[in-house]
Image 1: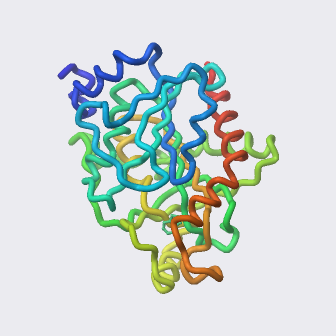
Image 2: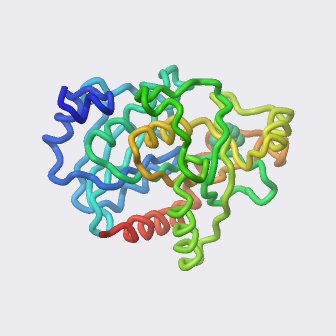
Length: 276
Ligand code: HPA
């Protein structure tokens, strides 16, 4: 293992495999949530690496999650987009599910944009809303291991792992593009079953604005490695008991497809803004 990969605890075989395939070190990493894989379509000079080719990369099993990394440039900024996130509910440990984040850290990624599909709990989080995640509640009762020195670190001076200054800038960018967004707290459940009406009532009472089955472990691990993090939820449905219909994964994928244009524009502008 080389010094970098020991620090980030990802096999050096995986890191060197990827390094041999890419020409430029990515600065920004994006994790694409359910139904959002297409966001990688706009990358220039793409180098696509199937996760199954990468030594020791854990497998993914969920529909709408295609397992590959797409390296390329967006608005001149070198990026990597992770298609096919790994979920703890698929049976992965938290450590395995965060493999892509540790790989990004080892490659030198400095900023991470994490996206997901989520159920809306706050009355203004209606299907189709884009929500900046300004804080989260971990309700999956899983520890997220990191380097020993980081175990008791506060998330950051704001008390949240999300970069609030960057998020505020993101909101201004969205406003300038006429893309409506709101801010809120994301709550992580283990899944894969959707919540009950009573659970959603409890989550609202606890202060959650949206609920989903991912993101929190990735964000914590990214912070362990000093990355700046921004989180964007696409609200795909009313959480259980708040809308008319029962929930299904197809609905989540369909709404994801509908907001794709706004999200695509927003992410492109967010990345362009990082051009140094
Ligand atoms: N609950 C949990 N996860 C989700 C939901 C939901 O309602 N919608 C999309 N992901």
